[in-house]
Length: 230
Ligand SMILES: Cc1ncc(COP(=O)(O)OP(=O)(O)O)c(N)n1
Ligand SMILES: Cc1nc(C(=O)O)sc1CCOP(=O)(O)O
Ligand SMILES: [Mg+2]
Image (cartoon, rainbow, N blue to C red; front, top):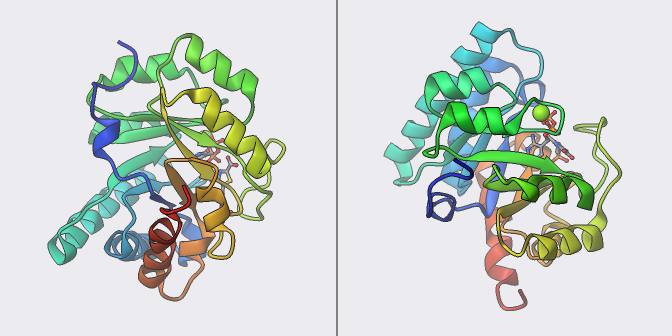
């Protein structure tokens, strides 16, 4: 077993990928509202990320986000692919996709446990990491990280910049989906889309905005505006 079954990654709309942030939302009880608003605004993927909650609280938060995603579906007819950050046991228990960093454990073990009906994301910060992953591919989507330094997460590798991201996208030969993360805002999103990634991934550009639904809709619209030039 390697990547997920054929067609699964293609069935996801990667263009706008929202990663939750509990402090920015104002606490765990506020996170599901941000998820619902982001999905109604057009996010095709939502990652539940909380680096500090104990297991049971994170499990409850993730379940509440599943419900929020269903509520969004009832309101707008669309729902997002849900991804669990780091916590493979929660992804396994709830039957959700997972995103892992380079230090989050063995991605091949994650594939064995999740099977081929769920998607696995992996953070990639340089060519060496990309080569290592493709030597025995398990990931369906690569988070190119970070594009720029960001106050939202400071323990990152060196920033790739637009040229670094574009080079990595080319090196994938489309063997995996690519999403860009780190420092992406309404002001620079079009330049990131121009690197050839399948999606842009944001935290604060949605989670720190008073109207997350509108913020998401504006970010998604950047794809329409740029489609003539990509
Ligand atoms: C889509 C996406 N890409 C990269 C990351 C960062 O993952 P990681 O390096 O494991 O850092 P944490 O998010 O776990 O702090 C991501 N979460 N999502
Ligand atoms: C969760 C995360 N991972 C990153 C990485 O580079 O791996 S940067 C990041 C946070 C991105 O936040 P914002 O959109 O507010 O810049
Ligand atoms: Mg991680």
